[in-house]
Image 1 (tube, one colour):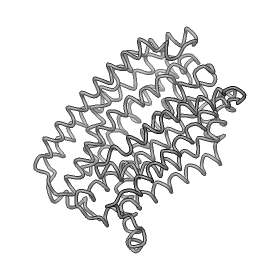
Image 2 (cartoon, rainbow, N blue to C red; image 1 turned 135 degrees about the vertical axis):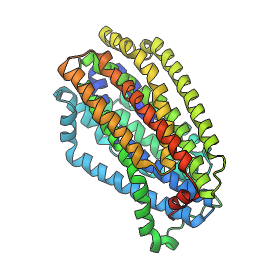
Image 3 (cartoon, rainbow, N blue to C red; image 1 turned 45 degrees about the horizontal axis):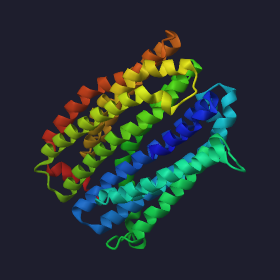
Amino acid sequence: MQSMLMIDTFLISPLGEISLAAMGIASTIVAFIMGIQMALANGSQLVLSRAVGSGVKASLARGYWAGMIINLTVALFFLILLQLFNHQIIEALTDDTSLYAEILSYLSVSQYLVLYTAVTQISIALFNASGQTKVPFKGYLIEMPINALLSYLFIHGWGGFEGHGVKGAALGSVVAITIRAIYLYACMHRWKDLDLALKPHLSSLGKSIKNHFLEIFPIAANVTILSIGATLYQLIYSQLSLNAYVAITLIFPWIRSGSQFITAWSISSAIAVSQAIGSNKMDDLVDNVDKSIDVAIGISFITALLFGVLSLFIGHFYPDLDPVTYAALAAIAPLYVFLPIARGYNTVHGNVLRALGKTTAVFKINFTGQWIISIPLCALIVLYFDGSVFWAFAIQPFEELIKMLPFRHLARKSLREFDHEQAKKLMYD
C-alpha cells in the first residue's frame, strides 16, 4: 500500500523541488486517510482471526460484512470531507500558495483511492486471517509494476501523449489499485469453502457491527492520533527551509515503506495470537510472543542496515537536486538509519497488546509519547529555537525511545495475567 506513494514520489522527483514539496503535502493527506483505513482493517483482522480459530463460519461472515460496512462508511466520510474542504485542508498544511495548484491536481484523483482501499483492505484481512497470505502478496506484485509504468506515462508522457505531472501519479495509482481489487475478488470467487452470503446474517448484523466497531475503534483512534501527529510533524517541518523540508519529504516514503516490513510481521504475530485465543489453545502463548519479538528486532536491524545503504546512494536515486538538499539528507541520515530499530520494538509490542485486548492502554502510551512530549518539543525546537533539520528530525527516534519501557512493562504484565476467562470475553460473536 505504501509503495504507491513511494513510487509517485520517486517518479515526480525530476520535476523539481516545487512538485516534490506539493507531492509531500498531498501524500501526507492521502497517507493519513489510508492509515486509518488500514487500522480499521487490522482491527477487523483480529476479529476474523478469532473466527477462523473457532471454526465458526457464520462468525467469519458476520465479521467480514461488519468490517466492510464500517470501513466503507469511513471511506465515504473522508471522500466527502476532501471534496468539500480540500482548500481549507491544504491551507492548514502550508501557506506557500505556489504549491496549491499542484496539490489540488493530485488530490482531485487520489481522493478516490480511499474507496478502493476500504474494499481491498478488508478482503486482505480475510485472506490473512485465514492463512492465505500469498493471495494479497501476489496482488501487490501485480499492482506495483503496473503502478510504476502507468504513473511514469501519466506523469511524463510518451511520444505524442502529453504527461499530466503530479496528477499523473495519482492516475497511475488509481488504475493499478483497481486491477488489484479485481484480482482479489476473483480469488474470493474461486474460494470453494468460503461462504460470505449476507442474507442469513441480516437480522444479527446490526449487533455484530456494534460489537465489531467497539473493538476496532480504539485501534483506529490510536492510529488516527499517530497519523495526525505525523501530519503535525510535517507541518512543523514545513517551517524549515525549503531544502530541508524537501529532504524530509524525500526520505519519508522510504521510512514508511521500510516500517511496513516490521509492521507486517507484528500484525502477523497479532493474527497468530488471535487465532490461538479463538481456538482456546494458549499454552505456548508466551513463548510464541517472545519469538515474534526476537524476529521483529532482527527485521528492524536489517531495515536499519538497508537504510544505511540507501543513505550512501541517495544521490543516485534523486539526481539533479540542489546541493543544500543533499546536505540536509546527509545530516538526517544517522537518525533515519536508527529509527526502525526503536520503532520496530514498539510496533510488535503494540500489536500483541491489541490482540490481548489492551487497545486503550496502547493508545495512552502512544498519545503521551507523541502528543504530550514529542510534538511540543519538536515545535519548540523549530519555531522558537530555530533549530536545524537534524534536531528537528531527531524528535522522531526520541519519541520511540521514551515509549519502549512502558510497552515492554505492559506486555509482560498482560501476558502473565491473560487466561481463559479473559479470552472468553473477547469472543463476543
